[in-house]
Structures are given as C-alpha cells and as structure tokens.
Image (cartoon, rainbow, N blue to C red; front, side, top):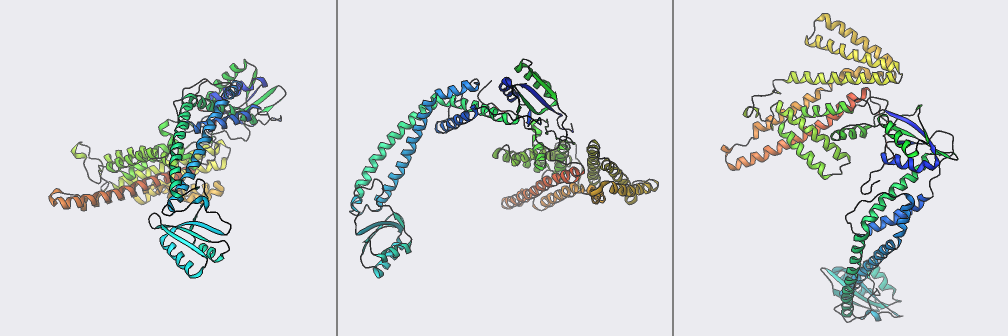
Length: 621
C-alpha cells in the first residue's frame, strides 16, 4: 500500500526474423518500459519502411485536415506491407483531395483581390475616372485613404508649398476620405508632403481595376456570383470525398502512427547477425503475462532473463483507484516518488481532506466549495493542474461538510437541533479539545514521517541516518511527555522529569547522527506546533462567521428594504470569509503534508513508468 509497484528488469534475446512480431505484441499489451541494452553489441537498424510510412502519414494528416469530419467505422489493423499498398492504392484520391484544397485556396485569394478592387473602386465611384488609363510617363496619379482632417491638412500644405499638382478629396465612409493626387513625377515637393502625412496608399493598378468604378463594381459583382457557384461545387466535391474516404483515412492514420512508433523503437535494441536484444522494465505482477505473449509469438524461439539492476533506479508505477489519481498528480507535481522509497501519497490522501475539512468546518462553505470545484473542473483541461486540484477540492469539500455538521456550523448558524438530536461540539467551548486534537495530528504524522525515514535509510544501508530517525522519534515522544507534564501537569513529576532528560539526550544523539541535517533537529518540536494552525484557521473562520451572523442576519421584522440590504451584506461577507477559509485550507493542508511530513523522509526524483504502448481509438488488432 505504501510502496510503488514492484518492477522487474528483463532481457529478451530472440531471432531477428521474429522481431517485428515481438515488437507488435509488446506494443499491444503495453507493459514494458524499454531501455537501451548494456550489452556491447551493435545498435539495431530501424526498418527502411519507417521513412516511407512517415511520408504517408503526413499526406493522410493533410487530407483529414481538408475533409469534413464523418463517422469513423473501425477497421482491422494491417501489417506494414499491406498498409503501404493500401495507402498507395488511394494515391489518386489523395491527390484529388489536395487539388480541391488548392482550388479552394485560389478562390479565397481571388475573393480577397475582388474585395480590395471593390474597396478602391468604391472610394472613387463619385468621379469619372478610368483605372485602365492612369499610367503616364510624366504624370503620377496616386490614390490614398485617410481621415478627413488629414486630407484637409494635406490640401492646405500642397496649396502652400507645391506648384504642379491636382488633388481631389472625396468623402469615403465615416470620418474617412479618399484622395486622388496627380503630379509630375519630377515634383519632389509633392512626394515629401505625402510622406509627411503618412496616408494609406491604395494600389490603383490592382487586379480587376481595368475600367471606370461603376463598371469595375458591376464586373466584380458578376465575378463573385460565378465564384460562389464554383465554391459550392468544390464544397460538394469535398463533402462527397469526405463521405467516401474520411473513415478509411482516419483508420489508416491510426495504423500508420502505430507502425511508425514500432519502427522507431528499434533504436533501443541491440543486434547480432541473426538475433536482436530487447531490455526494459515490466511490473512484476505482469511478467508472466508478458513472457507468455513472447513465447506465443516466437513459438518458444527466445531467451528471457531477469537482470540485476546495478545502480539503476526502477521506474515508478502506482496503482490507485481513478477517483484518487489527482492526488498522485499533485505528489508528482512536487516530485515523482522513487521506486526504492515509501510512497507518501496514501497518507496525503487521508490527511489533506481532514485538515481542509477542519479548517473550513462549515456545511454551507463546504457545499459552496463543492459547487465551485465541480464548475471549475468542467471548464478546464481535464489533464491539467487546475482540474486535478479541483478534483481534490471536491473530495475535501465533502470533509468540510462533514466537519461542519459535527461542529454544527451552517454559515455560522447552529441548525442541527432542527433536524437531529446531535448538537455537535462547540468551537468556542471546546478550544482546548480542538488544540489537543490538532497537536495529536502533528505528533502522529511527524512520528510516521520519521519512521518512514528510518525504513528508507535502513533499506539503502544508511545506518547512521536510520538511527537518527529512531532517536528523533524518541525525542518527540519524550519531549511531548516532558512538556505536557512540566507545563500542564498531565504527568507526575516522576514521569515528566526523566522524559525531559531523555528528550535532551535524544536531541544530542540525533544531531550527532544526522550529519548535514543536524540543524533541523531542534525544530522537530516546532514542527508539531505547526499543526495548531488547523485550529487557528478553523477558529478564525468560525469567529468571523459568528460576527457576520450577529451583525447582519436579515430579519423580516426590519422591513423589506433593510432585509434586502442585510441579506446582500450577509451573503457577501460570508462569501469573502468562505474564500479565505478555502484558500487557507488548501494552502495550509498542502504545507503541513509537504513541509512538515514529507520533509522527514521523502526524497523524490523518481522516474515515471512509461510503457511502450498505444491507445487505439478506431482500429483493432
């Protein structure tokens, strides 16, 4: 339960002619995390078909991007040779799909040219101008689009500084003007003035501008109708091709991806003239299944052996119910557990909701946080940090509802008496009990962390550090007895005085054994006190809720206006108090686990188990 899955490193030696079948079988069952073989043999060479299959995949991916989505009917997976022949047989259809896409792009570009020509023609539609006769050796005729005030300023400056020019300013759209400017090409002053005003120049020789504005606009209108018919024809052809080929191409894409992955994995193998070598990690519980598959695919022509992984860390694999996977995500977000140390995730799963529930401790806040967490989870990427945090928040909200019922808190109001005889504990009258409970949480979790540290160091042969964890546990137990007896008379003097002495001696021994970690030893008792923040934040939330209720609980007897005002204030203040409680519950719940608990034993830095596998969506073996 507190360990990651047991892994076994294996080596398979088989005939080269069986390689394709073994790789396909290993890929299909998805249990081996492949490693480069350490044997001093040449690297295996990827099949020559890999590059050709990659080219096919690119072409098919492009086709699927062009076609319209259709229902996909699964097909049986094809071997590489047959798969390549099937793709080749569809080559003509694929070329036709790309040709349709090219025509559509050309239509799009032509549409942009029509739009631009219409825009320019519309700008000068109020004057009798022929775009096809604007060219001249001596005269430069240019068109511009600018704000009306800029056009007026241009006119004024041309009148003042230029000599040989003609300018026409036409109203165009809202607050805009079209400017037609004619000047001798040698008139440098005009060019300088135009550059100064930074107007948007229009291309008077653009495509389709080959007549007077009215004629140009009429031609463009006819051309658009013609293009619309062509576009409908292209769309109809693409729709027809989609019906005929989308499902087939989607299946071929999936098959190609699988075969390309199988071909590319050859770089992990070694080879001889007639054999190949495969090495990797498999979960111990699935070793027999993997061996039986290899045996069946090779008709017994293979050798398989378990290897001693000298100095190599096995990959980390955890097996947990799907509903608890977000906790694995959070622990891995901090650092992946090592396969040779205790996995802290189960303790995190148990403790975090309890800490959160105690710090929020209100049925109303718990229900609201459950609603918020569910809403957030549905709106974000289901694989990301936010979604996984929201899943943990959902589970922890149930704990907040439970502890809210136990403490009889409903937005600060006590309502249990209306539907049950259980009145729960009162935060105000049971502060000492809550304080003791939170301290006990701290003692138990710190001791557990030290014990896990002892096991980890002992198994790795770090005996001094292992012993320091045991003496640290003795320091905690003796120190708690000494403090409880000396300050609170919980134990007689005959008990607590020797305990205090043992605690001091244990601290000195622990520091001597801890080496570089010696500076942390005196903080062990303060780490336990950190757990009192559970009581502190929980009590603060309850007190604030009580004050809000005392001052702003709406009453119908105050009249409808005051009732509404008090209700709004009541809800807003409870919402803010709830946000504070939720934030502190999440942050402090994580902090107590990661800093106080994980810090006693957790090293992290593991290697995530990544089996050679795939997920079929449409095709089947």
